[in-house]
Length: 83
Picture (cartoon, rainbow, N blue to C red):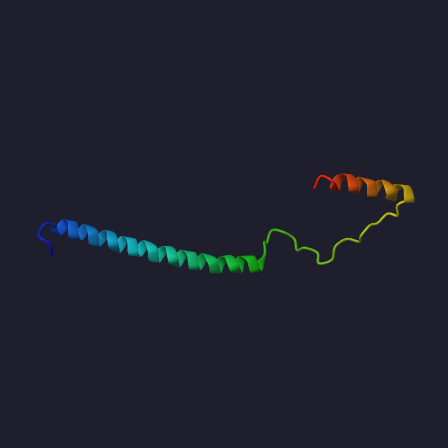
């Protein structure tokens, strides 16, 4: 033991090291446990929300007249020139 260091300084340093080790161990434990719980929670889904439908609604389509198709093509050309 160095002669310029008191017993209280050594005890204080030992206490701080033990607290830091306990804090790191607790943090690692919480992070690992939280990761497992988050994976389980994601697997269950949210209980308050209804289940999603697997099949979407029917697609709708409208036949364009030749004049409307030309107008639409012109609109697409005008909007795509800015890129």
